[in-house]
Amino acid sequence: MNNSKKLISFILGCLFFYGISAFGSYKYFTRSQASIAKDQPKSGTVVNNKFPTPDPSLPKNEICPLNGLSYTEPEKAIWSTRRPLAIMIENSAESRPQSGISFADIVYEAVAEGGITRFMGIFHCGVAYAGNLTVAPVRSARIYFVNLLSEYDPLYVHVGGAGNCDDPNVDPKAKALCAIQSSKIKDLDQMGRAGDFKTCHRLTNRLDHEVAWEHTMGCFVEELVKAGKKWGWTNVDSKGVSWNKYFIPWKFTANPILTNTSPALNVSYSFWDFNKEFQTAYDVSWQYDSATQMYLRSNGGQKSIDLETGEQLAYKTVIVQLVKETSLADLEKHMFYDVIGSGKGIVFTNGQAVSVTWSKPTRTSRTVFINSSSGKEMQFVPGKIWISLVPSANKISYN
Image (cartoon, rainbow, N blue to C red; front, side):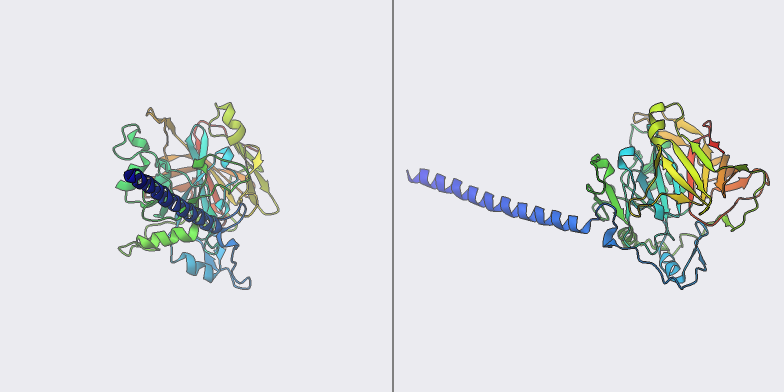
């Protein structure tokens, strides 16, 4: 009988301590979740809920090396201590609108898979005064973006990617993670280094509709900059080499000399012409606004909006870079776009279309655009630049 009482007492004791433990864990979890939620941006806001601006009376005489825009000395004082951020941004229809993309100095666009495009924003000058800007949703790396970002020697921000070196399911040409490792890219992979830094979080309430888990990752500019410092990557690397030691800026002028141009007030193109289903959601169109002299972007028949500002994406220059497209025969059906080499393209600026050729001899060399008519390097109007990598056989419409 005594043994039975001892057993019952032991069981009750275990249940008591289990209950205390469970309650404590619940309180810790809910408190942690509340703390995380408190620190995360609500839909349409920015962490810290502000966009500081420099004194409007200050002259804008500092030129951004990426797109030629003019800024104040305090803004340059910030970006000169940093290296660019190259951030992968999702463009699936359900993940729109994106957050923070309008602050990128340059945006690259190419198909990631299945006709769905992905963006890579190069953030440097435009985020100098943006505070802890939210950039979302952040997604995985692709090899052709790695080949492009190498021109800037940036911090590369992504969530995983295609193909480690020993992955048998990925064609060697598509192995982005392998290239990142072997090329010593300054990598801020949220998955690869998740144990070393926590700069990105799942923002499940960013939009006013539910999205799949993979479309919810958000990253924050100031936290990314801090993570870079942790690894010894500021405007210089751990050996004191500046990010722009070998960087060659494009040429910029307020009044470029354009010859043999065609009117281009309306521009449209698709990435997978044969796929009617995706043409509905992923076709791109640009409308030139003569008042601002900017091209306004629409995607899938809807205006492209930055959730952080509520404004339509607008760019001084839109470049359609025609590239060779290869469908790789690996298990994961990756795509490959040749951005190393040469090809043709069209530059849209000031309501005009200019035929160009492009060349990029190596992974780290700068892509150069040559005016097909004059044979001289293109001079761009200072302002944000959008570059779409479109298969060379696709039709580009403009009038």
